Amino acid sequence: MAESLELEFDRLTPDGMGSAPMPEAAGRVALAWGVLPGERARVLPIRRQKGALLCRLVEVLRESPDRVAPREDHYLSCSPWQVMRYDAQIEAKRRVLEELFPSMPLERFAAAETVWGYRNKMEFSFTEREGRLQLAFHERGHSLRKLPLPEGCQLASAAMNAAALEVVAWLEKRGISSSTLKSLIVRGSRASGQVIIGLYVMDENFPAAELGLERSAGWAVYYSDPLSPASVETRLLGRRGADHLVERVAGLDLAWPLEGFFQNHVEVFSLAVEEIRRHVPETGRIVELYSGVGTIGLLLRDKAEEILAVESNEAAAAWAERNRREARAENYHPRAARAELCAEEFLLPSDVVVVDPPRAGLHPRLVEALVRARPRRIIYLSCNPANQTRDAAMLGATYRPLALVGFDFYPQTPHVESLLVLERMAQKD
Ligand SMILES: C[S@@+](CC[C@H](N)C(=O)[O-])C[C@H]1O[C@@H](n2cnc3c(N)ncnc32)[C@H](O)[C@@H]1O
Image 1 (cartoon, rainbow, N blue to C red):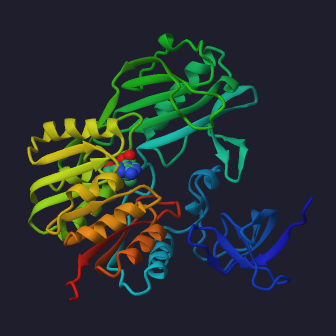
Image 2 (cartoon, rainbow, N blue to C red):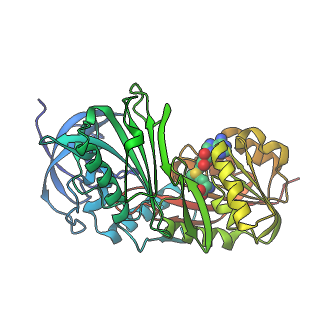
Image 3 (cartoon, rainbow, N blue to C red):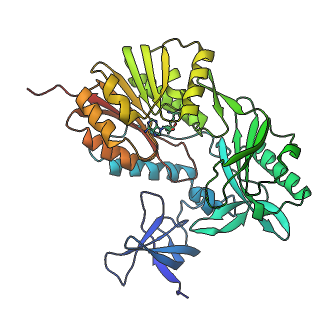
């Protein structure tokens, strides 16, 4: 059994853990979630990770003035920065961007007004406590240990928590134990107040047809292969009511399905759209890559004669087509394809390109296609600024940065979202 250590934490890592130099091992650091810079804390070593000693917080011995009491016992699982004052969270996120982009002034870091109950997607697990079924999260760093959530989670809306707890009550009444349950996905719309639910079970004989819920507008029950830890559909066991939600973003109604991607913090996302619009010149053609259900491109529909949208997920592209029809955006053309495989065919030097990739960032083949086609402006929204800097560096010989803005899409967590605007430089002869 490892002995606990008392350490002075002096900084946060870019992914949000407290970091302390190890006095007896020059150059080595100990890392722990839930500890802030300026704090002295007792921590318990768990394991080594990439040269650092990963630890669990036992006790804070001297508190930072930025510390606040967390709202939830399970905060380390869902949002480890619950212990930090909100203005200090924004300052820390601003510093992350400044360090990642040292040669670029950060115009601003847009804070959120709503810092609780903002998420429109939650994924819960299940456990039992004192013989009762409970919603749960996996304990951070221990995928097999679970923490019960008797009231849900404060990152979700009250309607989403109520709907999730109704599912638990129904399962309990039926005597269904956590061993046959995998997860519960809850989606909520701020605009309509509606909630829809996906229940992933590991029992093919689950009584899906009998599930009756009043707090959800619709639900689906899936058998999900027990060998996979993910909430994946192996077989649909039953579905009732609504299969999608509609959210209003900047005055436009957008539909998205239970399983599909939709921006979590609609209020802050609207600020990002405003910023994107500010940097999109009136133009002939916008190319939107990684376009999901059309959220960004449809909000730019008045800015171009034609918008070509590329999304790899066929279902999302089909919802984008439906959103296009509802918005009567005749100039919006969604297509289901992988951006890196088709960009070369259609990118033009006159284009404005908007990209919003997943955490991995831009595919190297797409970066090469952009360098060859030289569209005049690239507007890059990123949920992983570290990979965004890598992509910007690869585009660096062709593009110069025009603007960098940060957004707090995920208050109480270390997650940083950034918008980088790049402009093509004049070609040297
Ligand atoms: C961060 S989401 C952004 C979606 C959309 N822009 C929005 O605001 O809702 C990234 C999207 O990229 C899609 N995607 C992932 N890999 C892709 C690829 N190689 N080509 C095109 N789209 C891809 C995902 O399915 C997902 O919808």
